[in-house]
Amino acid sequence: MKIANKKMGWGQYFSPTPKNIQKLADALVGFSLFMTGYATVMESKTLAIIFIVIGGIGAFGQKLVGE
Image (cartoon, rainbow, N blue to C red; front, side, top):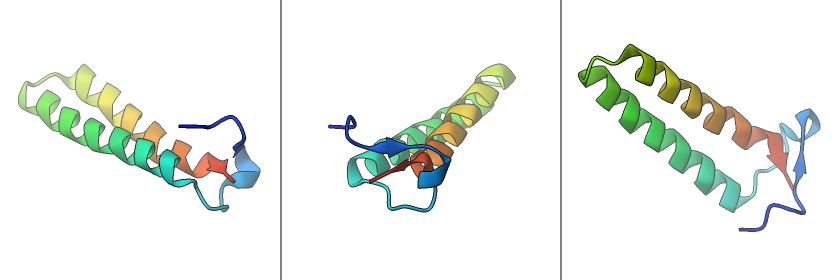
């Protein structure tokens, strides 16, 4: 996965996101959803909050990387 030649920043918010970054961000969001459910079942509020934040970073961070 090559990220070196990608632009990052607020100006790239509406530009198309490269496919490899989309896959990485979607995997991060999917993992955080699964782990948030697990943390909720195990009644660990701290872990649930941490995984919600990780999912938010994955979903929002995906939009900051453009071609």
